[in-house]
Structures are given as C-alpha cells and as structure tokens.
Length: 93
Image (cartoon, rainbow, N blue to C red; front, side, top):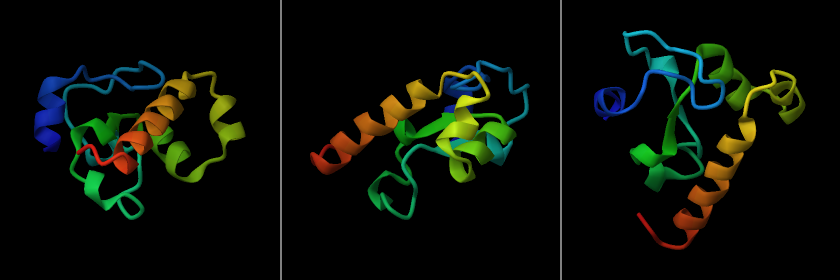
C-alpha cells in the first residue's frame, strides 16, 4: 500500500509542502487517525499523509502549540482528521 501511495502522490509534505526526495522512507507515511484507536482505517490510504520526519514526530508526539510554531498549515491536517472521524463513525469504509 505504501508503494501505491508513493506512486500516486507528489513527493512533498502534506503540511509544509517540503519536498521528500525520490526515495520512499517509512517515516514519510503518517497515519492521520492512529492505528490503535481506529483499526478499520489502518490500511485506508485516505488515512495516510506524507510528512517529513520532523513533522511526523511532531504530529505523533508534539503539542498543538509546538506544531503551530512551525508556521506550517497544520489546520489542513486537523480538518482531514475531523473528516475521517466522521466517516469512521458514520460507517463509511
């Protein structure tokens, strides 16, 4: 699935637009909704965005304040997260 995502999408960060290069690396693929809390979406391509290593770490372990200090468009990611939650609980797959 990650190979498919890499082939289908531009190789740039979802929040900053920074280029990710030409080689797919595992840390570029970030789950919007966590795999543990939302197991049905673990392999849903809509639930995966491309981020830089630092952005991925901030998304998983940082605070909203830390993210906002980067100046990147995190709201786009938060909006996607909200949309995916609605679909998840609404029964859409």
